[in-house]
Each structure stands twice: as C-alpha cells, then as structure tokens.
Length: 296
Image 1 (cartoon, one colour):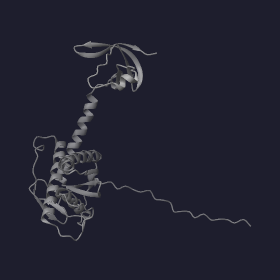
Image 2: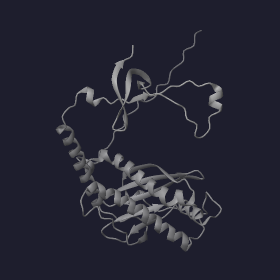
Image 3: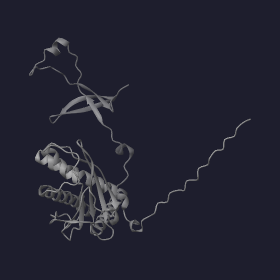
C-alpha cells in the first residue's frame, strides 16, 4: 500500500520591526558612517606617524562606527577600564583594551611580544602612563577632526585635555554617542577602542554635518549643467616612439649610450585603444600634439 508522509509546517516567520529612535528623527544620522570613516583615516595617520614608522609595527584601525550610547552596555570588564576626561568643556570617555596597551608597551620597550595579557597581573605605573597617553592622543585627534566639521575659528582651535579619571561608567549628558574602533596588527588579534562623546558635543557635530550637506546641495543646484562632452572625462595616452633594434645592439647598451631618434608622428590611445594619428610639434620648449587624424 502506498505510504503517505505528512509534511510538518513551520510556523510563519513574523516580520522584524525596527524601532525608530525619536531623538534621531530629523537629524543627519545617515552622515555618521562617513564621519566615522574620516575619523578612522585620521587616527590611522596618527598610528603610522607615532607607532608604525618609529617602532616598525603595523597597527591599523580596520573599522569605525557610531552607536547610540547606552550606560548599561558600558560596564567595565576584564578587557579594560573607562577613563573620563577631567576637562568639563570636553566631557568624553575612552576605554582601550588592556592587551592592546601591553602589546604596544612591549613594542615600545623592545620586549618579547605577548598576544595574551594575564588578566590578574597587576598594572604597573609604566602601563598606566601609556594608557593615559594613548587615550589622550586618540581623544585629541578625534576632537580635532570633529571640530573641522564645525568650521568655526573658535572650534578649530586645538585643546589639550587636562587628564583622566578612572570611572565605572562614563558620565555623559543625554544624546551621547559611542565610537567603536576595531584595531588589528599581524601579531595581535582584533582589539577594540571605545570613545564616548557627550551629547552636547554630538549636537554641535550633527548641526555642522547638516549645514555642510545643505551647502553641498545648494552648490550642486547653482552649478550649471555641463554638456556630456565636458562632463565625460577620458584619458589620452600618446605613444611617441617605437624603435626596432637588433639584439646585438641591445646587449651592447651601456650608461651614456646614445640612440638617435626622430619624433614625427605619434599614436594617440584612449583606454588602450588607438584612436588618432597626430603630429609632434615643439612649442615654448614643450612637446605638443597637433594635426589629429582619425585612424581607420
């Protein structure tokens, strides 16, 4: 007798609903990934100047992203501890994983590399000084990049952070954001640096981003539309000379050997495809192309 198999039906999948944050409505949050990329490049430049070239290392920040800051997700752990800025005008906090600090300290002192730090090892004064110096360097470089968005003479002035305090949770005003930086090196697993920016600072940055976006749109509207012939850019490559030489002459070439040539015609190529024949002329000490003819 034929057998019948009963197919089990899986319950229908409910569509996921994304909850909108009312605090982000009307604000240029979509421009934050571009700002994070600018910050990533600025911090990588600082790493190349102060670490990679000096200590022959290859530290690189591979990703950077902004996230809305939630105090309950910023509890300290074995990875590191939070440092809060003492400066009331620049209320920000920074946390760097301890194994990254120890790895950079080993490079600075020329010690044997250790990719894993002992979680119970006591912190030395040298390690603490390096931690504070790294946090200060990252914070000041980030603030300098953020002030460039504001485009004001007062905000463009570089300020030096006065110092750091160890805290359990960063103290911020409402509307704070967290910048997460993932750093890698050939002999170190991926580590994370976190920078919490106060709500007042982020308000100024978001207003500056909105103004910059508005000015770009206005500039595009005011700029007259160019015809296709002016908007389409092509690279022309002129092949000035081709010469055939016997193998014996090529093997006999030495420094100072002169090969007589005569520049008359040139082949003009577009993206590697020959398109024109042109005459070679001299004008005010420069070689120029003239008398273009289509190639059949």
